[in-house]
Image 1: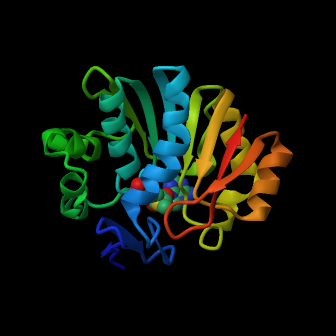
Image 2: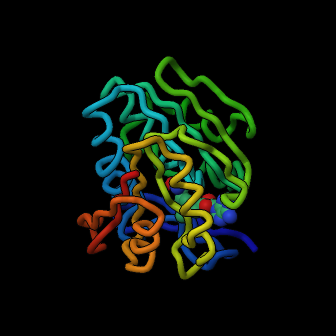
Image 3: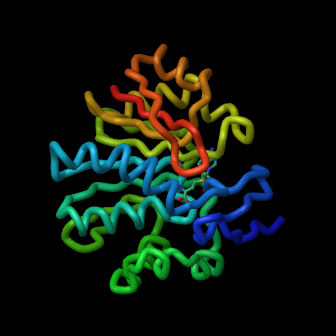
Length: 221
Ligand SMILES: C[S@@+](CC[C@H](N)C(=O)[O-])C[C@H]1O[C@@H](n2cnc3c(N)ncnc32)[C@H](O)[C@@H]1O
């Protein structure tokens, strides 16, 4: 089974996963989705009150969330402690084909883009003064972080593709991983997921979704 590179409607690439039967990003635009759901609805909100921010990325995938977070850190002079979890990393050859550097006008950060993919799993890497990257090649089911993160980018495949990841045991792990006032954001707006988040103890908000999607979810611990 080979996962295919696809184009989304904003011109940015995504990958279609044969294993899960879905794409890594919204068909309406991968870059637009990351900007709206993760950068605007979480990182920019936290950055108003603090300059040092710890982030957990649930599903490193193509590394787009990670790269756009780095670019935002440079732009806003933030210090980011980034932990990326991924059990099934994409092959190097596919990573090389992604058009994110070009579409984000980020040629001056090209080396960083390739570093985030090439750096070893299971280790922490200091990538410039402002960005440290821990890459954990583990299953979401095995996550054990506690009170460490200011933000979680909850970017697993959708509930119809992997329902078990959106159930209480994993969502409770997310709650534990966050500090008090920590923010979990996801593109998913399903009522059942919002109800689960509430029952675990999150304060849950429905926000306007990225282009093409009506709503997204933000949950605060
Ligand atoms: C929607 S994609 C993430 C997209 C990613 N944030 C990006 O910008 O490309 C979901 C990711 O979660 C990974 N994944 C799925 N199930 C997993 C599991 N149980 N444990 C760890 N990783 C998993 C997939 O391999 C995929 O890379």
